[in-house]
Length: 203
Image 1 (tube, rainbow, N blue to C red):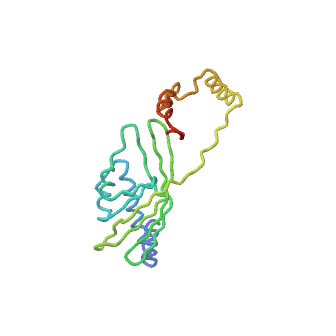
Image 2 (image 1 turned 60 degrees about the vertical axis):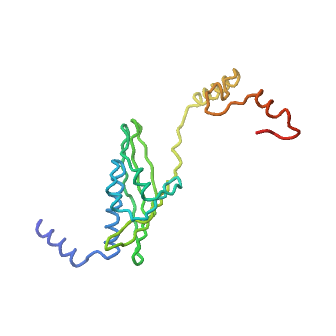
Image 3 (image 1 turned 30 degrees about the vertical axis):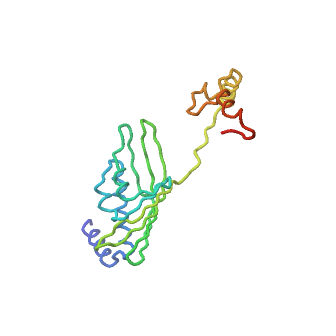
């Protein structure tokens, strides 16, 4: 029975070979997953082999990173941090010697015991160079999602409000008391800077 199934699968593959677009999608998806797998360990070789000489990476913060700088930033995750990225959706379309790719990646990360998840939408431009595909451009987008609401008892909410009311009533709700990393207002300094002005609001 097993032999018949294997023979049937082989005949199906021969009679229904993957179309060029299917083959391209499979090839680039495999390479993209390899690139994602190389991020956590900081495997520069995988990215170095895939990126074109003039490749550009635009991260989720909008920072434009050129090839050399991007490779320098690839470092293994620090101790206490682990994670992986998995492609959950993938499309590729070829136009001449260029392939346009869109894929969605799901991230799972453990940060010092905290389990975090995120999702990214990636757009890429690949180009066929010397018989192989090279990655020209990557643009990463963070898929923003509203966090799940946390239901708290009314007594807990009242306790939060009361705590801030006590701080405000005792003078504890100030930048100095809260040790905030900001420049503190100094009335004397303000007077010295502005007392001689005919007009103005100061800095």
